Structures are given as C-alpha cells and as structure tokens.
Image (cartoon, rainbow, N blue to C red):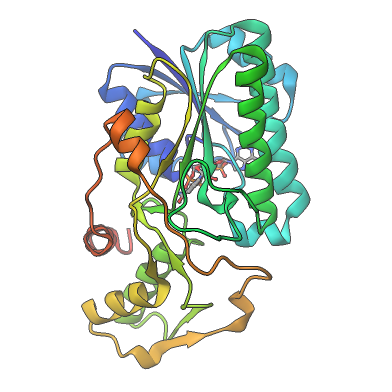
Length: 320
Ligand code: NDP
C-alpha cells in the first residue's frame, strides 16, 4: 500500500486530494496545526475524518518535520499547507513569507537527510507571474511576484527546483491557477460572492461589497485540479506543470452571472475601494498544453458550469 503525507489537509485542496488518494488505495497521513484548534469541517463534510490519520506538526520546526518523516515513512508528500490568501499576505507579510518558505525548506531537508526517494509535490501558483507581458502564461514565463504571498511562493518554487537540481530529489511543482469549489475558504472571491448572494436572497444582508471587478482571472474546478497533483508525482521524472483552464473571465462576469441566476438586482453590488489591492494583476490565464500532453490531464469545464455546481451545493447546505 502506498502512503502519502498531505500538509494543509484541512484546506479545500487537502480535503479533495485526501478523497482522491483514499480512492486510489493510499494510506493518508495529514498534518494539522493542532488537535484542538484545527478546522476539520471539510474532511468531515466529505466523510473522511475516520479514514485518515491526523498528526500535529509545526512545519516551521525542522525537528518536528524530521520526526514526522522518519515515523510515517511516506512514498509521497503533497505540500499544500500555506498562508494562501493574497489579501491577507499584505496584512501579514512576515508570517506569510516565513511560513510559506520555511515549511518547504524543512520538508525538503528532512527528505534529503532521511529518504531521498520520497516524491514531493509543491503547491505553486499563478500569482508568481504578477507583471504579465505575454499571455498565455507557460512554464517558461518570467516570474514577477506582486504580493508577499507571491514572493513566498516564488521562493518556495525555486527551493524545490534547487533541491531537484542539487540533490536529485523528486520535487515537482504544480503551478495552479485559481480553482474553486463549495469547500473554498469564505474570504475568497467566488465563495464570497455566492454565499453573499444567497444571504441577500434570504434577507440576511442588503448588499454585496466587492473590490475591483475589472480584473480577469483563469478559474477552474478544484476536484479536477487535485487529480493533476497526483498525476505530477506519477511521472518518471520530476518537472513543473501549469494547471489551468486556459482562459480568463472578469470578476464582473462572475458576480453578474450569480446575481442574474438568483434574480437579484445588480444595484445591490457595491464597489468598496478598501478591497482594492496595493498592486494587482490585470489579466492572466495559463496554457495547460504541457499538462494535457505529458500528464494526460483532461480539463474541459466551462467556469459557468463550475459556478452552477457551487451554487447548487451552497443552496443545499445553506444554514447547516
Ligand atoms: P486553503 O487556504 O483552503 O488551505 C490552506 C491549508 O494550509 C490549510 O490546511 C491551513 O490549515 C494550512 N495552513 C495555513 N497556514 C498554516 C500554518 N502557519 N501552519 C500550518 N498549516 C497552515 O488553501 P487551498 O486548499 O485552496 O490551496 C492549497 C495550496 O495550493 C495552498 O498552498 C495554496 O497557496 C495553493 N494554491 C491554491 C490555489 C487556489 O486557487 N485554491 C491556486 C494556486 C495555489 P488551517 O486549517 O489550520 O488554517
């Protein structure tokens, strides 16, 4: 039986990846911050809580990470833990940068010292390509981070490449564009819009406050994106892959679609400049050609179909 460690198992991707690996017959060990404070709702929602082993670990402490690797002897490590919000990273730059880099270094040091055959997946991000010159973004595009979050992820990405090139470790980075689901954190745009709109329908709020709606992003469906994570670690050689839908839409299109679908007057959308970011990517989308041809990863969902799925699930669970 193959075994995997998932860091960030309590997050959106952690929950879906756990389900996928269990379906594939893996033993899954998940790292959590604490048995007392961690949010286990996503794992609970998918009915996975009693099918995984959850272990406390402060990933910024090398001795704890060494202990985890030597005790659990995984074949694969999926490193999803990170302070993952761009907005929050402007408020907490030091914590974001420290954790998102240190945790990767510790895991790779532990793997290098204890068992260099362990395969390592790193959750890299499209945010690394902040100032965009040429679209679509490819694996060869030049990085230029525009936020503390993006800076941390660029560094972590290059730490992985460096351990691959210097020590021959199997480190692969999935450069994922935005991907959404019902399990997305409530501070992220799509979830916030859908939840807010349903609140308006139920008379629980008057307006939805949003930031800059003119920016364009490449959005996809989380459940399909975690399949790519697994595929990345099944290749003969480690490498980096863009995982994206291949096209971008404006945030305005998303809000208007949700409001139209729920028959809400668009006058209830209120632009609040407090939500604008100090620096912002205007338009970005990625080419998933390499993932399609090398990994044989299939993706053909339209983002409005993704919105429909999330809206349906949100309605089903509203108030629960
Ligand atoms: P979430 O924000 O839903 O989950 C983040 C996970 O990281 C949670 O389990 C959280 O634990 C954990 N975490 C955060 N800070 C710490 C910390 N200081 N110590 C230990 N654990 C911590 O993210 P997603 O599931 O959406 O994303 C997974 C990964 O993919 C992240 O690294 C993210 O940056 C990256 N990514 C995501 C994209 C997306 O569109 N979703 C796009 C590109 C990259 P807790 O529950 O305790 O807070």
